[in-house]
Amino acid sequence: MKLVNKTKNINILNKLEIAESFASRLKGLLGRSGIADEEGLLIKECNQIHMFFMRFPIDAVFVNTRYEEKTIYKVIKIISAIKPWRVSPFVCGADAVLEIKSGKSAGSINVGDELEAI
Image (cartoon, rainbow, N blue to C red; front, side):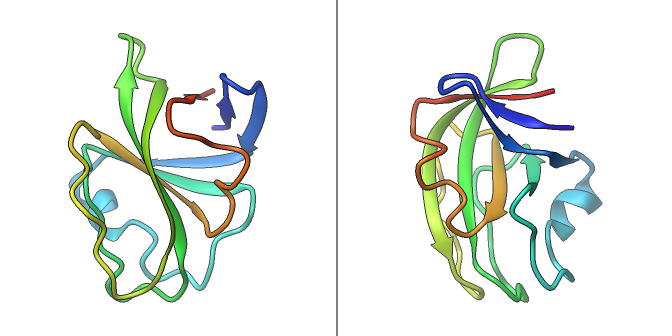
């Protein structure tokens, strides 16, 4: 899947993975040595993340699902450059988190933007 910023009408990611099962949500990006600029992971049913055993920092974009189609997400909080061995704060109202390369959110995603997985 791809991820676009509908608010800014720009492409964000060319390869979006979605973690919906318990196992895939638990694993997240663990075991990877890095993440490419055009890749990301959307973890559903998630309002807090940990960075235990991670090897690289990430940007975490917390969103809530908009509309019935469940492919449009409103950005409610962005935490940039979360380092390994850290825990994010609990984000009230979030029901998913987008994990992307550290620095990727700067300039391309803002709080209030609508993102769409297509």
